[in-house]
Each structure stands twice: as C-alpha cells, then as structure tokens.
Length: 213
Image (cartoon, rainbow, N blue to C red; front, side, top):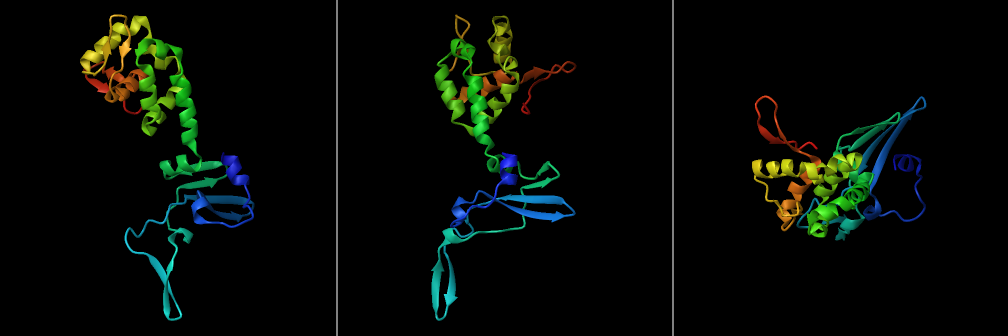
C-alpha cells in the first residue's frame, strides 16, 4: 500500500472533496524527498448555518460539499523510506489497515478448536467481528496462533477455572469442560483469555491484566 501511494499519479477528470481520502505535500532537494501526509476530513466546522459569498449585490450560498479544507496539522511524514506516524488513527485509515485487521482476526477465529470448546461460539465470533476494537485486538493473535489457544487445552482447564474465580469473570465452564458464551459482556473476557492477559506478579503476588496485549 505504501509503494502504491508513493508511485501513484493523479488521474484525469473532475476532482471533488468527497472522493479525496488524503493529500500529500511533497518537497524535494538534491534528490532527497520528504512527504507530509494528511487525511482529508469532511467539512464540519458549521453545525448550524452555511457558507456563502457576495457576488455583486447578491449573497449566494456555497455548497459545502464542494469545499476542501487545509489546516496546519500533519498525520505522517515519509522520508527516505521511513514513516513517522503522528496520528495513529489516521495512519490506519489512510492505509486501510482495518481490512487487514479484519482478515487476520477472522483467520484466528476460524480455528476449529474455538468452535468445539466454546458453546454458542458463532454468537461470540459475530460480536467480536462487529466491534472494531475487538477486531484489532484479536488480529494481533495471528502472530501467535498457538499461544492464543492455550486456554482451550485440556491441561489448562483448571488454570482457567482459577483465573475465572480469581478475577470474577462472568464465564462458566460446563460439565464437558466447554466454555459457555451467553451474553455480549463476556466477549472482552474471552479475548483476554485468548491473549493470556491475566497474571499474578512473582513477588507481591498481585493480580492484574495486561491491557497492552
């Protein structure tokens, strides 16, 4: 996606603000180029009222959708094949990373072990894939698919029971050692089990959750 953006050339035709995802300021000197990238945001300065201009003796309204706004903010800087990210959300949207997050999360969630060991699993999967924050968290597990399934192993069930008890999780394990998903509030807890995010410190034996995973 990076190379596609840098090598792309403007097309021929009518350019309207609503089809612009981002714009680039490009400066070159001595065969060195620096690019400043900014995500385009819709004109939403006026929640009430409208834009207009005086032409002759008449005041005519300006169609807000035809206006393109520039400001002094920058989302990314690209210099000598390095990207400096100043706004992470804009970075994700410019490069359309959410599509990749969705694909990776779906791949993780398609694991047959999840389907076999979690009752009402399809409901859990649907809840996760309909939440952008959940999708991003689960997508990271694609880099360690085996680690994300540890809580499903038979020899980990008792450890999982301990975690559920110690952290007062709203998750039940039935007589067949299957996890039961029966309400949407459990989705985040299931993801944390997949992340192996619950821990106890070695010295103080304090319980905690690693929210950076």
